[in-house]
Length: 130
Image (cartoon, rainbow, N blue to C red; front, side, top):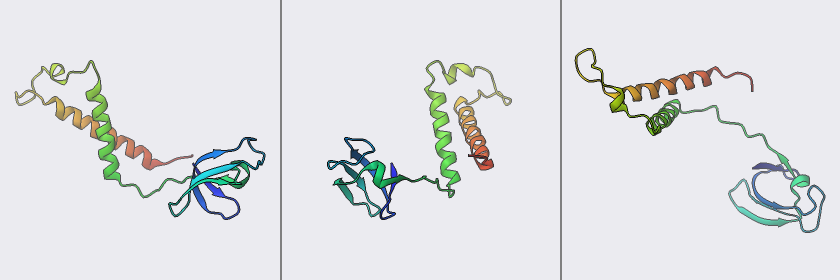
């Protein structure tokens, strides 16, 4: 969890802590964290999670790769559809297409997956209150 060291202002990633008295200071208090330079600081004695650290609001980047997101969501939707135990695309498509050819069920699933991803991205672009 991201925390800011109150005395220095450095933002660190707290991994573990030991505070026998909870929010009260104790001589055995320690905190393990990874500092802003990536160094592991293991069992730093004298630090109390409640007294020496404060919460940091993590802000998500607004620089989103939309194509990567589209691919990832499409893949997840396709996996969910194909993972349904009772779904057999070959049994579901026994009708004939307009040109007399049997429809490709996998093409339909791919189209549905991409449409779902596009709908999600469209809603996310709208933003809204947080």
